Structures are given as C-alpha cells and as structure tokens.
Length: 113
Image 1 (cartoon, rainbow, N blue to C red):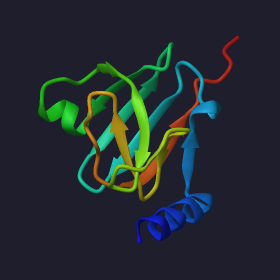
Image 2: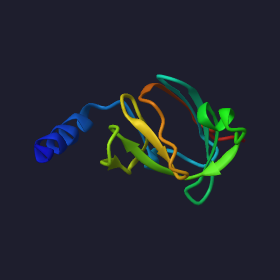
Image 3: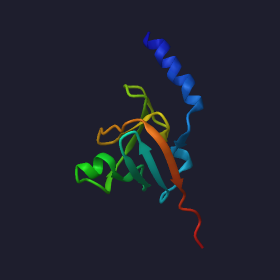
C-alpha cells in the first residue's frame, strides 16, 4: 500500500503549481497563503530564508533566518527541489510544518540599474 501511495504522490507532483529553488534568486520574496496562515519569505544567501507570519509571528520569532527543507504531502515524503507548492506543506529548517498551501505569490527582485 505504501508503494502505491508514493507512486500517486510522484505522479501528482507533475501537476503542482510550485516554486522551484532553482528559479529563485537572493532578494526574491514569496507570499504564501496556507489554510491557516500567511507567510512572507525572503530568499537569502547560502540556502537560507528570512521568514515571518504564521507560526513565526505567533511565537514571537518573525524575521527568523531558517532553511526550507522542502514540501510534504503531510507525511514523511518530502519534495526537496521546491520551496512552495499549492496543496503541499512547507517544512522549515526548525521542523515547523505549515498547513496546506492555497496560494503563492512570487515577487522577483528584478534587475536594478
């Protein structure tokens, strides 16, 4: 049964609205709306992110610098090549896992002259 569930997750990942790590640059920002919260995520150097909102606001830890391990379907299977995907949950480096993502907005830093 576990094998068929994993197969289903892999197949469904082809259709996710997702934000891939490789497509982000330092200074880009994401606004992520989950079922329970809104998170603001800024891409930093060395694979780190500055995060506020949701759990971080409730615990007085906003503007926390942390990693994003990837996104999960709610179990232990994790998709490490993405930062956010609708329907999945973000797993932060401090082991906080969000509720399922509903919407993602990407704000590219862009080229400044």
